Image 1 (tube, rainbow, N blue to C red):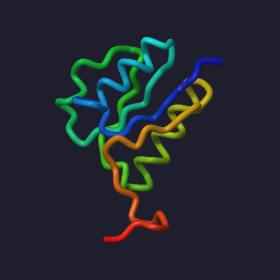
Image 2 (image 1 turned 60 degrees about the horizontal axis):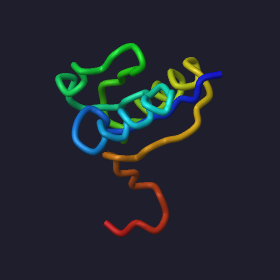
Image 3 (image 1 turned 30 degrees about the horizontal axis):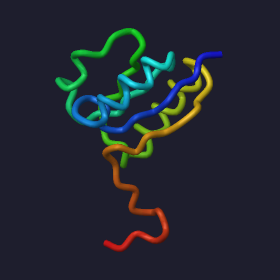
Image 4 (image 1 turned 180 degrees about the vertical axis):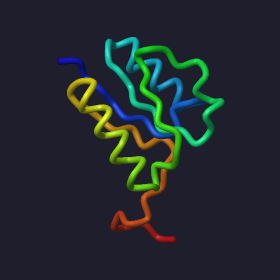
Length: 90
């Protein structure tokens, strides 16, 4: 089964670079991105989810899509803040 990854903020910059590396290694990526225009470059190896990774529904959709596309192998938290993670000071 194909390895899949979820990448937050994967539409441009460092996030896009991470996505491109994962694709070069034969993986498939689910990209969570706030700006739909940042996803215009995506091809059929990229599954896009427009929204915020801070939104539980968006995260659940991304995970479901990654599992449908293959074996969810990793999560790259490039552009999301999870305020419920212990140890963070706000």
